[in-house]
Amino acid sequence: MEEIDTKPATTRERVFIVEGALEEATADVIVVTAQPGLENGFGWFDYVKEHAGPEFEEALKKYKHCGVGSSRLLPSFEYKNFKAIAFLVMPPNFRMDATSVEAQRIRAFCKNTVDIAAEEEYSSIIFPSSLNNDGIDWVAPVLMRSFKEWARESPYIENFTEIRILCTSHEDYEHYVNAANRMTSTKRRYKANDEYDDDMAVEEPVAPTSKSRRRGEPLVPIPHEDIEHMKSNGMFLVLSAKLEPTILNLKDQDGKKRQYRMTNRSRDGRKLYFRCSRCDTLAKKCENAVRARLIICNGEVMGDEFPTHHADCEPWTDEQLLVQQIDRSSRKTVKEGLLQPFEAYQDALTRISSVVANDSNAIELPKFPEWNQVRHQYFRIKKRADREGEEEEEIPERMIDETAEIGYEDE
Ligand SMILES: [Zn+2]
Image 1 (cartoon, helix red, strand yellow):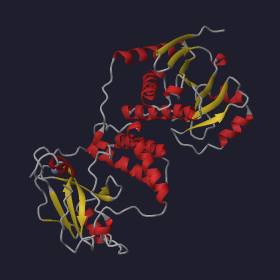
Image 2 (image 1 turned 60 degrees about the vertical axis):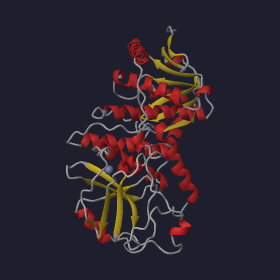
Image 3 (image 1 turned 90 degrees about the vertical axis):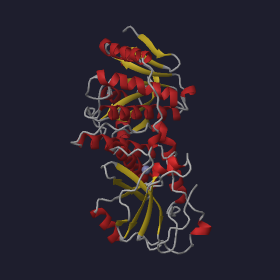
Image 4 (image 1 turned 90 degrees about the horizontal axis):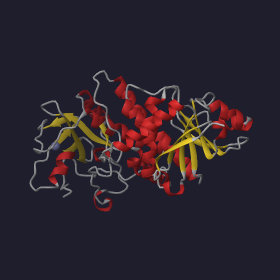
């Protein structure tokens, strides 16, 4: 019998680093990591599969469609040391070209796995010390941080007694102990990433429908030729906080990126009114502030192409625009029922790391919001989509007369 040595990362967090043999371990749930397709896995996958027996193998087949990051809980069948087996689908190797996004992605996967176990009212779980073919020097701090975050964020923490990282070698154990020590000695600054929090974004004020929208009258879409004309001028309408294509990103005279949101449009869809969203935010704090406005008529900028912005209005960085659109397009897949909320979030992280990896201009690595920061928003979209079914959501634009911009002030 091997000597079992335990080191709690902190007792409050209920995370324990343990050196020992799998044969002697017991808990409610054991985590195995597998490759997509679930036929092959990493670490103790084969051992667990063998001990759980043919029924487990059969049960796994139902989930071979699960993509990277997916987790499911299965019965432990013949493997009596555990009540359940959680599989977590992992890529064979981590992406080292987008390290901090990759770490964030892996942490989201691991936290989700613990949540799944907790939701089934299990209270102890064992994770392997390595998750795929890559060594543990990278993954040890990632895993430690993910459990620390889980302890801080999860509503299930009170009912959970133990997250154990089982190290089957002393070397692995030391890696984890070091990672845990480093973590407790450096306090991570926690900054809310409100730039991407669509709850805090300036939403298009929706006018009361009864007054401003003539019911039953269809809103004429922006003519196709106008949209094409805009595109040929480098103007693309992208998704707003309400997931409508009403946002326009344009360069100013200095080549800096500005973002305008459509605040109004003519009934025939040929005249579009935009305002800079950041100027709008600033204008709320002081009266008579400068707010950049832009009008597009028949697909072309009418009047001032480079409107003056508020002195404190900051241009957008490529990273901010990228993160915003990836996040919103992921939310849209939830709204359209194409992906479940967590899957959509994972998809966003995956896309962001591949964009960064493929970008020859090597833009700075964007900070994508953490799952716990956006989770409720993704679920709210899903709830709303489920409730409304096929029914169309309220259209943010108002119906107005041909060309006039009727008193459309939200302050
Ligand atoms: Zn502005």
